[in-house]
Length: 236
Image (cartoon, rainbow, N blue to C red; front, side):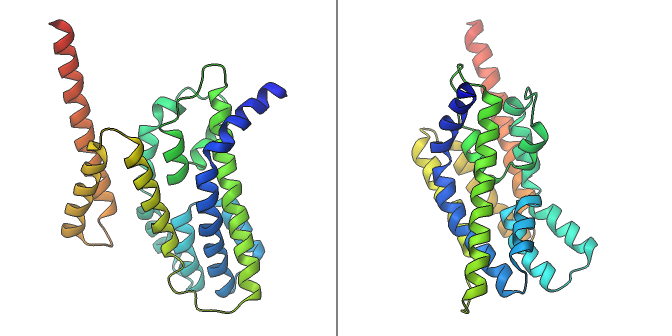
């Protein structure tokens, strides 16, 4: 038991930034759910079984306006299509996971991805268990924040316009932190430029999927180029 707690103690401090963000993001979501007529139970269930921040924010509107299920499915698929690319990039880390793989896939949010993808876990620790603790802790933070928000929303009455911007703010913070930590900024610059081009071509409502495809294609081409370069240098 003591050995297994070592993975928990390793994962906990690495999720603190997500805790701070999710506490406020989840609270904003919980408040939006409450002011739209959905109680604490609905908020808790959505955070447990859906656990997709941006989709849950969109889900408030879809639930409140009784959107057609087929339309809701297509919108949800488009909004979360980026996770296909997250999943591809995580094959190296999750490919050999023996236990809890289904939960790790389910819990791979943007923030969890940002923590796990750059983490170099010491050999003495069970890396599968570290991934599990990071994912579970992040979800617990989201559940806690959303339930607290639902409670606050049931007690207070105020204008909630702009609360959904909290999710965008967290993405900006994560981007800045990764920019500071990384020496090379090529992937970040590629992501920004590709997104800007796709935004101009397809507009704000439809640029996400083309942007992700373009980013993936450029990075894959760049990776192959670097790989060939390294092979040539080794031959020399």
